[in-house]
Length: 321
Ligand code: NCD
View 1 (tube, protein in one colour):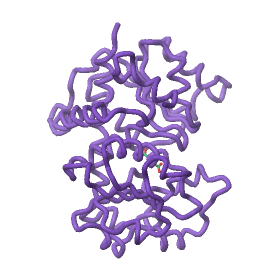
View 2 (view 1 turned 135 degrees about the vertical axis):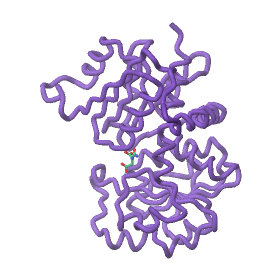
View 3 (view 1 turned 30 degrees about the vertical axis):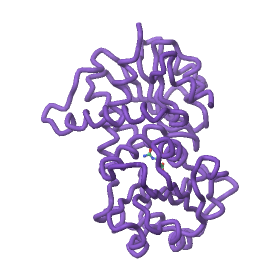
View 4 (view 1 turned 90 degrees about the vertical axis):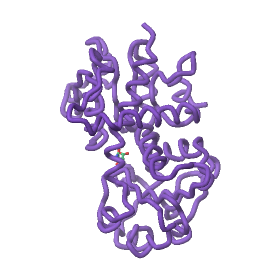
């Protein structure tokens, strides 16, 4: 088990931090999804708040840009009645030479309970979790191309709300899997939940290393990858993480790997279309697919609030002091 996977579970087997979906047990994942279900109605009430995190301080510490992850974490914390601070680190004391860990320890000294951290470096959030005090929880909101556990959990939650049983699903993850923390976290979670057919569909240049070792099957041809699946998950080209392996010919990429109205006919008739966002229309997905009748992309965003509430409430409830 990776150090992140063991760091996030306490001696009683409960969630202490959330750093990765790797090694999270099936029962634990299902209980997060069940707790999220119980929070969904809060978002529909006129007074959208529950008191579970009253008196807690949550800091969103983002060293990389984000729209939906940061705002849904903020709303989730506020709907649990926490005090919330948002720090976009490009614009803070980083320019004065302070290390990221020193920033974190400074905030910890102010009595922060939960840090939600996005960072460009793989393993950064696990590194922080190893350094913080016992009273502090770290939630990984994306570390480089490594992991994005709350995205995978909200994806699983969205799938569960449409497809009763994970045990007979075919799911295709299509696009830049090589650089996608979303894909990596999804594969671990979906495998644990018992999805028998996980397809990784990408051109050679963007295929991840050894998907078979994680229980997924590589496909280099979009049509066969999409054939009769229940769920298709599109991914953005992560240009900011491409170094040697670049995709420059976007029209050719769209022709070979874009999700279009035409190739959506290959899916099962009741299949759903997902995407973590941000979408690049006309590159990995066409507008009429992103906003078409099969799309659950905006539902994913809404579900993200309930799932993030669930994770924060569970971790706060597990604290012993
Ligand atoms: C993803 C991310 O940041 O990893 N977006 C998200 O969190 N919703 C995917 C992406 O940036 O393409």
